[in-house]
Image (tube, rainbow, N blue to C red):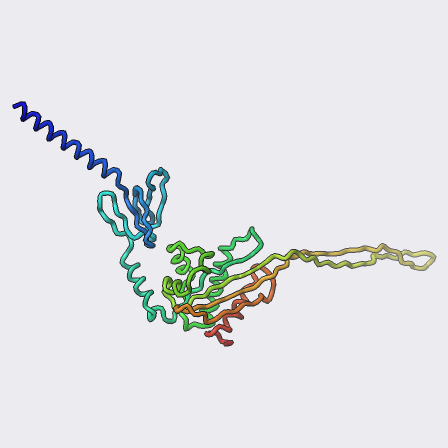
Length: 282
């Protein structure tokens, strides 16, 4: 009987050690968020909603929000795998890799703004010029399917590509990413070179007449008046490069705007687009 109790006690003790070891191992494991670019982020998934995944990295307490559009799948600590990316994204990727599907399509990237004026919003101005350029191409070459700039910018954002990074990317890679045959790169280099003052001065004579010994004589006062104005002066240049999905440059041009000013770019864009390979002045 004594040996029986020892056997039972030993079995229970062994089971408890095994149970707590498994529990401790499960607690030590982390959830793994696998991004579309292959990056793996280890931590704890706190919540999943329609737009974002709330996530805490290992050994941290701060909560982060990850856009679902950037996530491939989640491998939970329990071993369960939840696929996040949609089949439509995979289908789009397959279509973009097909040159025939990209035929006749063009994407205008946000323009890069190079300036010595720190107070201006370079991102906003670059996107305004991007929209202006896209609309000009639509008017000049209606046979080209120009992708909506909002779609272009959203695709770049989902792939964590900033405007300053575009110059370091291969044109054929961007063409495939955006699903187009041609990609338009642009930059607007504008430098404030100082101010210039303009002025004028006018002298007038105010007079009246008074009678003296039956004669009128003139007397009066000289009055000086003037006006002046001050304007900023700029040195600027617009550059446009168009590449095809093979990485070849099919059009490269640079020109000073016809008039100076931060927003004086439309006429220059129109001039350059009309002389592109698809333009009316080619």
